Length: 135
Image 1 (cartoon, rainbow, N blue to C red):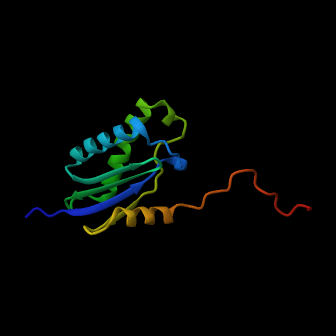
Image 2: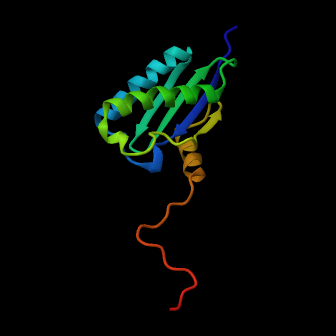
């Protein structure tokens, strides 16, 4: 009996930078395929958006979700930063945060909404207003 658990992951680049477009997005998909082969997990779906990545995998229960997402992020970060110079302008490619949900019947939209809700509020552009000063 070959048991598998379906995991849905979403993570994004540092500072929500929309840098995953064009050749970088295509290369990221191939790097995720490579990392999945190294982990012996089955990729079910991969969607690369400009500012986030959604991956669905079927993995044996002996492989933890944290190990899977860390392998995807580490493997892709090193290669992408070496191949695409614009990705070295941010301190690190990926944030430490990610969202994982387990279940076969989840839709990508549900997991992406959960990721969006987990993000800290964005600071408004411009200079902050001074606090407590004379008006």
